[in-house]
Length: 282
Image (cartoon, rainbow, N blue to C red; front, side):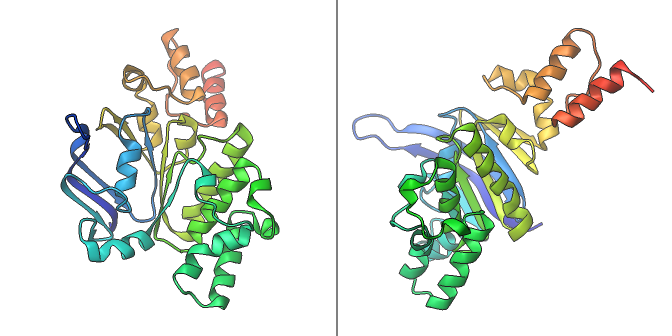
């Protein structure tokens, strides 16, 4: 299996001027395979966003090594290829939007890198179409909803055609409608473009359709498996102050009352079927 990202015995601490460094994580090992949709879950301060910033060399490990498509992030000459391979989308889309017209914003990085005009046009239209924003290409970004702005930010990254897209809490500032829009787009990225998708979030429901869920707490990985297997560990997640999807919560509560229901029925449909089968066995 080809690795998009390899984290080997990595440590990181934030330096402080007049105090001891603040340790975020140490001796961390992790690999992410190409083409997978991976969700990293955890509370604020657990280290997930700091780790995400290592994936395109915004931050560098204090110890250990981090490889992006075989390139060492500490190697200065690989910085540009790494940044082209891994695109980042952050919480606040306003911090990534730099132009007064949607299509100009999506084209911004391509123009700075000197891409031919015809190729820029093709890439911009394809990226906007991919996130369902082509009809808004001549709109002013400040007049869009939060979810639409975040889709434009994703289009700007897609236009660069990276092999991996890392999204750091992209729905944190959105209402439920905007959150749903953005998560649907994220789910389609790997299917349509074959890119590796790494989603950083603290919303359990956003992780249900991932290939893999990694749970962090206190700078450590405490769970790493499929969504069904991770969310079945209700006691573990509760012990670090994390919830589970509503469906799992319901099934777990029923089991506490003496039922014997599978905790891996994550979707509403699967949950309903599991309860129906228990109530009305064949």
